[in-house]
Length: 358
Image (cartoon, rainbow, N blue to C red; front, side, top):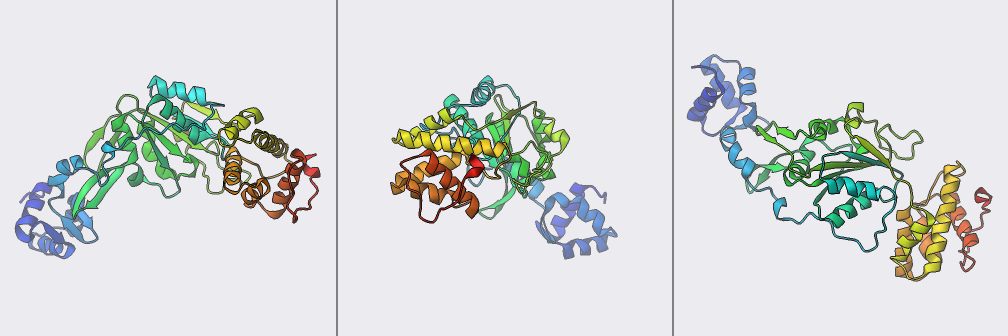
């Protein structure tokens, strides 16, 4: 008997049936004077568990590739909803032009936390009616999470497309959020970032990108790690990986005037919105000058406005939203706001001088 993969599977099926164990294979090897390791390697694609092989897996691959995923993404509307509170600023116009062009042009957006990187991409897609698939990257994200893999559905092993393959096939925008948290497992996307699609080696299929497909990545760093330790968990990304992004946009916080417009979309108290924006602007300038180690983001201001809408109390809204900072920083921020807003009632437990912001 020739030791081709097909002959081995056929003989094992005839002897033991569709499912075999390592004990069955060892017994078969003894009967046929074969090496166990050689045989198990040849039928590795049929392995479904530790010491377990399903000899029909290869026969079903073509069917399972076409089988519906556990949650059929094709039936979902992946176009983000328009947010009436959105105010365009910064790199939004450039990002929108890239998406609107439908040209494959991977883009990297970097900037401090809470300054609208992800939100701007979502709203650009919403305005253009483009599908968006967002993947939140972590240190644990691997090829199976991104590209896809076999899943157990109703007792059957079926292929389930990952978000990257879904985006490729749909011609959608693939948003890799917090890309600088990734490990070197992200390198499985190299060919995709070259516009060449991907080979699904587990099922022997090539998926080419549909028209309009593009990749946008966001990060708090530029993929070189966080020198000041501000963004714990960020990693140094492979230089060849970063080089596959033609453009990098540096996203800054909006100006106080733009930020006031953003807050006014959420709150009718225009004076409060303006004072919050001015307060944040002073804090950021001090941060950039190295005077403090913390900053108030646009997202944090939105949190304060939402807290004010809930509690109806400015002091409480600000205090509960700055409680995340250490006591000294929190009290300094509150004291500064007291100087910005003459109508503000300082909480009784705050008594810190704010020469830092002078």
